[in-house]
Image (cartoon, rainbow, N blue to C red; front, side):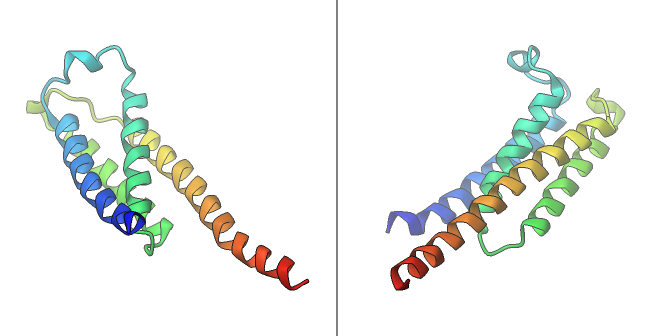
Length: 129
Protein backbone atom coordinates (compact mmCIF):
# COMPACT_ATOMS: atom_id res chain seq x y z
CA UNK A 1 0.00 0.00 0.00
CA UNK A 2 2.73 2.47 0.98
CA UNK A 3 4.76 1.89 -2.18
CA UNK A 4 1.74 2.63 -4.37
CA UNK A 5 1.54 6.11 -2.86
CA UNK A 6 5.20 6.95 -3.53
CA UNK A 7 4.76 7.93 -7.22
CA UNK A 8 1.77 10.11 -6.35
CA UNK A 9 3.65 11.79 -3.51
CA UNK A 10 6.62 12.37 -5.81
CA UNK A 11 4.35 13.98 -8.40
CA UNK A 12 3.02 16.39 -5.79
CA UNK A 13 6.56 17.14 -4.60
CA UNK A 14 7.65 17.57 -8.24
CA UNK A 15 4.99 20.21 -8.83
CA UNK A 16 6.03 22.03 -5.65
CA UNK A 17 9.71 21.79 -6.62
CA UNK A 18 8.97 23.03 -10.15
CA UNK A 19 7.11 26.03 -8.79
CA UNK A 20 9.81 26.72 -6.20
CA UNK A 21 12.63 26.40 -8.73
CA UNK A 22 10.93 28.67 -11.23
CA UNK A 23 10.02 31.31 -8.65
CA UNK A 24 13.50 31.31 -7.10
CA UNK A 25 15.05 31.65 -10.55
CA UNK A 26 12.85 34.57 -11.54
CA UNK A 27 12.66 36.71 -8.40
CA UNK A 28 14.55 39.96 -8.98
CA UNK A 29 17.00 39.37 -6.14
CA UNK A 30 17.85 35.96 -4.79
CA UNK A 31 17.43 35.42 -1.03
CA UNK A 32 20.42 36.37 1.14
CA UNK A 33 20.69 32.83 2.52
CA UNK A 34 21.65 31.58 -0.95
CA UNK A 35 24.31 34.23 -1.61
CA UNK A 36 27.08 32.04 -0.22
CA UNK A 37 26.31 29.08 -2.47
CA UNK A 38 27.59 29.27 -6.03
CA UNK A 39 24.83 29.75 -8.56
CA UNK A 40 25.82 26.69 -10.61
CA UNK A 41 25.62 24.44 -7.57
CA UNK A 42 22.13 25.77 -6.90
CA UNK A 43 21.17 24.98 -10.49
CA UNK A 44 22.61 21.48 -10.31
CA UNK A 45 20.97 20.70 -6.98
CA UNK A 46 17.58 21.98 -8.12
CA UNK A 47 17.55 20.14 -11.42
CA UNK A 48 19.04 17.01 -9.90
CA UNK A 49 16.17 16.94 -7.42
CA UNK A 50 13.65 17.60 -10.18
CA UNK A 51 15.10 14.67 -12.16
CA UNK A 52 14.84 12.33 -9.16
CA UNK A 53 11.26 13.34 -8.43
CA UNK A 54 10.24 13.10 -12.10
CA UNK A 55 11.81 9.67 -12.55
CA UNK A 56 10.05 8.29 -9.46
CA UNK A 57 6.76 10.07 -10.10
CA UNK A 58 6.61 9.02 -13.74
CA UNK A 59 8.21 5.58 -13.72
CA UNK A 60 6.66 4.56 -17.04
CA UNK A 61 7.98 7.62 -18.86
CA UNK A 62 11.11 7.48 -20.95
CA UNK A 63 14.14 8.81 -19.08
CA UNK A 64 15.21 10.52 -22.30
CA UNK A 65 11.86 12.29 -22.50
CA UNK A 66 12.03 13.38 -18.84
CA UNK A 67 15.55 14.71 -19.37
CA UNK A 68 14.50 16.53 -22.50
CA UNK A 69 11.60 18.27 -20.73
CA UNK A 70 13.64 19.25 -17.68
CA UNK A 71 16.49 20.56 -19.83
CA UNK A 72 13.99 22.60 -21.82
CA UNK A 73 12.67 24.09 -18.56
CA UNK A 74 16.25 25.07 -17.66
CA UNK A 75 16.65 26.77 -21.04
CA UNK A 76 13.34 28.63 -20.59
CA UNK A 77 14.42 29.84 -17.16
CA UNK A 78 17.70 31.14 -18.58
CA UNK A 79 15.83 32.96 -21.35
CA UNK A 80 13.43 34.48 -18.80
CA UNK A 81 16.39 35.62 -16.70
CA UNK A 82 17.51 37.78 -19.62
CA UNK A 83 14.59 40.15 -18.95
CA UNK A 84 16.26 43.37 -17.75
CA UNK A 85 13.65 44.11 -15.06
CA UNK A 86 14.56 40.92 -13.21
CA UNK A 87 18.19 42.01 -12.73
CA UNK A 88 19.30 38.41 -13.29
CA UNK A 89 21.98 37.04 -15.57
CA UNK A 90 21.24 34.80 -18.52
CA UNK A 91 24.14 32.37 -18.70
CA UNK A 92 24.33 29.39 -21.06
CA UNK A 93 26.69 27.67 -18.62
CA UNK A 94 23.91 27.61 -16.02
CA UNK A 95 21.75 25.75 -18.53
CA UNK A 96 24.63 23.38 -19.24
CA UNK A 97 24.98 22.78 -15.48
CA UNK A 98 21.25 22.05 -15.31
CA UNK A 99 21.51 19.59 -18.18
CA UNK A 100 24.61 17.85 -16.78
CA UNK A 101 22.88 17.33 -13.43
CA UNK A 102 19.80 15.97 -15.19
CA UNK A 103 21.83 13.56 -17.33
CA UNK A 104 23.90 12.29 -14.39
CA UNK A 105 20.85 11.67 -12.20
CA UNK A 106 18.86 10.01 -14.98
CA UNK A 107 21.82 7.78 -15.90
CA UNK A 108 22.01 6.64 -12.27
CA UNK A 109 18.25 6.06 -12.24
CA UNK A 110 18.53 4.07 -15.47
CA UNK A 111 21.30 1.89 -14.03
CA UNK A 112 19.29 1.27 -10.86
CA UNK A 113 16.18 0.43 -12.87
CA UNK A 114 18.10 -2.02 -15.07
CA UNK A 115 19.69 -3.64 -12.03
CA UNK A 116 16.36 -3.98 -10.23
CA UNK A 117 14.73 -5.46 -13.32
CA UNK A 118 17.51 -8.00 -13.79
CA UNK A 119 17.66 -9.21 -10.16
CA UNK A 120 14.39 -11.21 -10.15
CA UNK A 121 15.35 -12.85 -13.45
CA UNK A 122 18.72 -13.88 -12.03
CA UNK A 123 17.13 -15.27 -8.88
CA UNK A 124 14.58 -17.21 -10.92
CA UNK A 125 17.34 -18.58 -13.15
CA UNK A 126 19.37 -19.71 -10.14
CA UNK A 127 16.32 -21.39 -8.58
CA UNK A 128 15.68 -23.37 -11.76
CA UNK A 129 19.35 -24.30 -12.28
